[in-house]
Image (tube, rainbow, N blue to C red; front, side, top):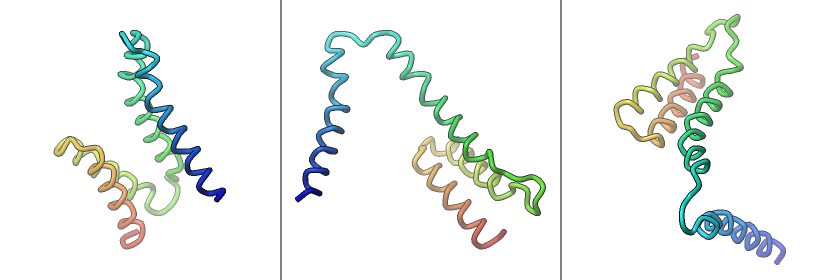
Length: 103
């Protein structure tokens, strides 16, 4: 029964967080919120890329070749398909295949 309460609490919290902006900004969204909505997604993606590539060790045998190939796959698919989900999933699969089967 405790699990049901935990799931209900998490669901209610998620719903409140999702719908709260619609109640707070009924008339017009402030400019700073619009600005943050425009600026933060690319900044977060940039931070994630840096975080993913920060541990590449250039002194070992393959010095980051799987990572760089996976990044190239993501960039190529994003330019071609313009679908972040396909790009990220394909880059992840490419990286995992490279480190498991090739390198």
